[in-house]
Length: 234
Image (tube, rainbow, N blue to C red; front, side, top):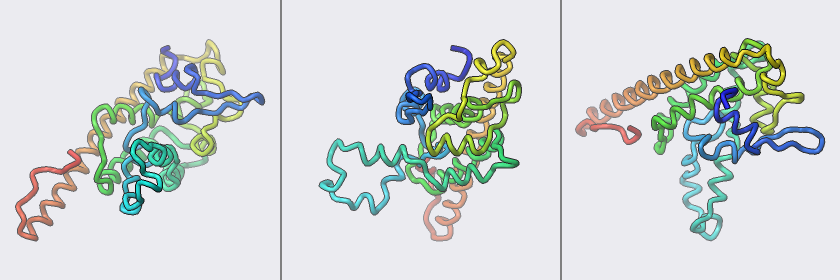
């Protein structure tokens, strides 16, 4: 239970990995992101859920896919990788690898973009904790180095998000390296990066909110409207 973060243990041991007859392992992505390992706003590659509420989508009659209790439209949207987000992540690659630092910078940009462009954006303390863990997930889960947990092949990450498939020959480090694997060092690195992700997320979130409020107050001042007390996203 202490070998990996909870979301990783859940993927490996709770039936969310499907092993085909030919030995290929794939992830049940919908189950992986269900509670308690739930993807929320500012996901790595999935769109913020309420972005589905575009003017075009809201204009669709109930009889054409928005009948009461119909969750399929939203589910399909939520679990379809956003190509633009994936490309932004992959573009950070250097020398064929993506690092923990690359994912941290991607998280910062996701928060800024969400605040600026998504009026429904919700980023609670719980959401920050979820993001802090999940932005480590691919690198720490699928990495194949004994004592360097900080990077992973870009091709492996792209395949993971496009096909929800582990790389051929995948095995957790504890299996791949046996007694040589230092689980204490692994967990210490994970905890340090997770804490850094939470701190970065909080800092960027507050900065971006403050910048938006200043811009809004300036616009209202120029138009003669009293400054707003706060932003809806707060």
